[in-house]
Length: 203
Ligand code: VGL
Ligand code: ZN
Image (cartoon, rainbow, N blue to C red; front, side, top):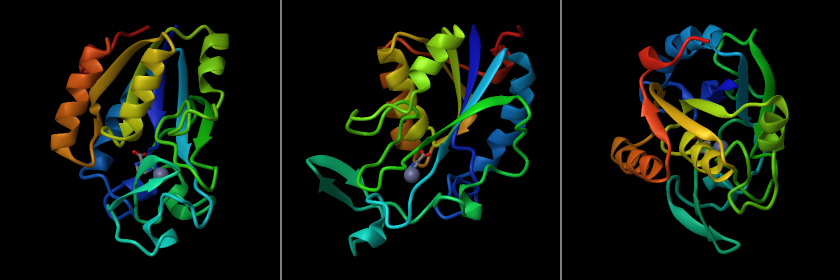
């Protein structure tokens, strides 16, 4: 079954938000237009507790600096997507009536979670993989923010879990364009496909 996965289309990742993705709001009409074409639509939501380990403020360090936490590289982000805050809500223009389930991530205080499937150390599952398999989802079409972080890590995990994976390029935007170029090469190398929304099948 063809499934649309919407990653982190939240206020804090939009222009004017706490961790803005350039032109992040341009994905909204594209994702809204895609939703009716899919049998199953699911979403993730970045959902951090206050004082989360991924925040620069939690370490008295500079934003976008990389440090080691428990042996793992961690980019220190501005405080973003704090549970129940306005910034953590989906963008008001995102259509949500067809979203069957929302998988929250980044909830453990001490570890970040870019992927919608697992935290960055692959210690804890969100349950998304089992849910999709139980639903009979086999082709996953990824959209949302940010293309070079949460979308990319979700795509990598989906491929490792054995799903057929498509990245809908015009339905995502990266934090860093140069990084995204590398990410796309890696996705193709791992067996993912990159398509445009106009080429998404109608089911
Ligand atoms: C994300 C950085 C930190 C994302 C989430 O949704 O891509 N990036 N938290
Ligand atoms: Zn986050």
